[in-house]
Image (cartoon, rainbow, N blue to C red):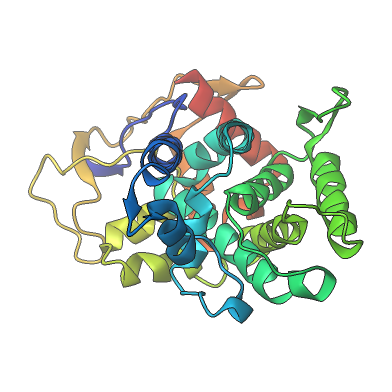
Length: 316
């Protein structure tokens, strides 16, 4: 008898994957808290909303009210119901597949870092073209997600407001980023932080293109106390391929608790019973794709490998 080591489990795309769902809930709760509590209560006749804006909006550096945590907090604050709705709708629309493919840890890191990049553009580049003002909203983070979606699914048809004509996602990203750039440098932004939008798109592209290669997400997991498995899962589509604890005493010192041991006859092969374009999707094929993601990132996959991974996750 030989010992066969297999990665276990499959799962499908979720309508609301965990990070997307948490981000939606947090943004709505913060909006309701701001609208129905902070504007009502006062401290020495000063509304609490004034203190909230001072410490949690992204304040211009020139104001003297800038604090480093504002690069995160401003991403969860919105100025109106439509501002909130369109940002969250776009996050859900373009983010669900990315989180399902990348895994929740990597998606959350990507989302927050895109927002940080957008905030830095707003702090240091926007004042060149317009008066520096406090900034709020998840738009910069969403532009990062939109950019990653466009590069991951470049030919996916997207309906662009207000034209409502389906265009490939790659052109959708280029048009929106170009529009943000033009509005930003011409000073036609009004109260919309178009430079921040451009910064989110640019940061999203850099993170998509180089984040895996330089080990950024692996480093983030280590800094936040993640285990070796957390690092490994960051590069694996965790909603598709899930680990279980081993069912035998086998222990791999380099990758502990990753394999389960199944005794099979030497000539027996494990069937997947799944096909793509008439070709059987085997466990070996899946492992090769996952290993390629782990080593060089999702963007290194061929179009065929991406389609196999996507189709597999939708069928199961």
